Amino acid sequence: MGIKLSFELTDRDLRYFRTALRESREAVRDADEQDILDAIRQTLNDIRKNEPLPDFVAQRIPVIDSLIDMLLDEEWRLPKVDREHLLAMFVYFSDPEDILPDDVPVIGYLDDVIIIELVTREMRHIREAYDDFCRFRIDFDREHENSVDGAIRRDRLDRKRQQLHQRMRRRSARVSKLGNW
Image (cartoon, rainbow, N blue to C red; front, side, top):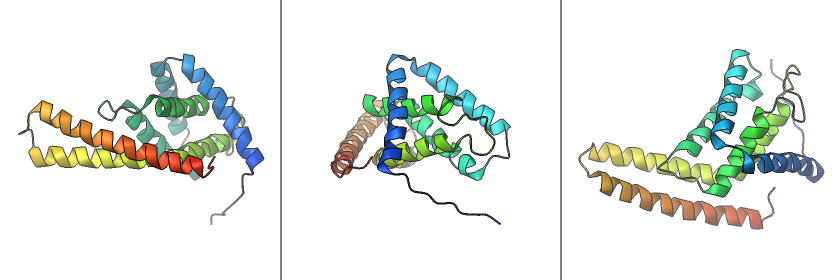
């Protein structure tokens, strides 16, 4: 039988997590992107070795995997500011000595999960746009089955990406005007 725990993060709590993420962002600006990706992959591999994982951790691993895919998708071309945001989250998540040390049984990843939730909520419009881009690309490739010139495919994908990037910027700007974290 499971137990549901619910708690509210106050503005003060959120400031604490924002500060931690900001510090990770500062580290990202000088870090090599490939080193960060290697570290997050190694962290995910180490976590998977410790199965069974607490569900609140296990449920976030596919989310992180999809964020890595989005970051690496050369046809998507995630804008620099959004790349830095994801990389900062990866740096934080990969740090075993963050707010709650990861080796503390059961709750060691609680702070990491909170950061993941906050960042993914903030980036929801970006993730939605990326999902739409992936669906468009799959549909386009399925419809044309290699019968279309590569330059035409690139042009269609570029146009769709530009439209979706504009949409995600508009939606993200609206959210930030509302004062979300």
